[in-house]
Image (cartoon, rainbow, N blue to C red):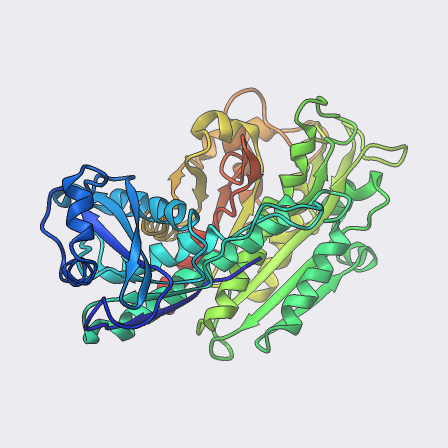
Length: 496
């Protein structure tokens, strides 16, 4: 994948200096900014002429490419709409328009003049973080199993003219944060987009080792099935019983904080392919079950961002990686398994396997004496029914943690919606033959799944993110990288 280098700078005269493309954000029916006036004068009035002729008016979504002048080989005008309504939503739309417009050129470097951009409800650092993140995400191309991948973005270097020397340092930090979050999102997308015959539990273990090799503050430990048996992880191992692929419990330990400081623990569901097991899924769209490791992918992506930024925190990523397949050895509906916690579980549906791997991983997370534990999982179709694809379902046993994650989701536009975690739902998990069943009775499927997990998280502050609706798109098909944006924002705020 290509990458863009971002640099914040103050430029006195937009018409001087060398660049393949000078980019001017322009409002609808507003006088030209200082930089636009400089480029207009140098080009003999080309910008005003384009507006007079009606080729460009500054409306949101518009763009206009003009011949270059002076040191700029091209001038790209990008519409921002009405300045009175230019808020965060309008800024994100501007970023999308910018990506689309810059992709119509072959410019390898560009200068973006943003001094005139002022969001009603967002600061300049927020705006620069958003721009860097969206531009970085736009560089993503799936390449690993196609002979002719889509053309890569040509833009490799973008200078941001802040217009103010005092804002350069803060602007550079914002750009670096946005780019790092974008890199994490792209890494999550890459892993989740891989087919199940490539991205196996063993492949994820290899990727974790590679991440550790590339980052001095990060170490990786892989627990094999023999060790899981010794630890009593009968619930996790019941999921992998029917496959030839060995399960892996992957532990990535980032030590950026002070020794002894409690870590933030992220636990990802890593079902690299989910056939449903003996409770076999319908054939239609079963290929999309390669995305069932979206939670694990988000843990990898978030740690990628944390390590790139060198955040002064201790963060542990735990990935319960397994494949759920039917065979003569597979777990059957009605079987009873014993979890690492000692609690027994009646498996009424082998397609409710995510909670079976997560409960042992959540029990294991307790040994790190965590600050908080957040699990991320493509857990229930019921969450898709409840929230669709726009919001991640958020459940928590601690109100402050829930509020912090919701705020981080708003700030990063990777939003969640809090769902109930009431004891009233717990009785739906009652079993005559075990301490609990792995599915509840009819209704509230995403809630009863969270209630199941809550039984293994009573010793620490915990949140559960059900990303079944937000982790991938079906049309066009592909992973979204969510909720890396929310998680990275949450951790950056804790670091700050």
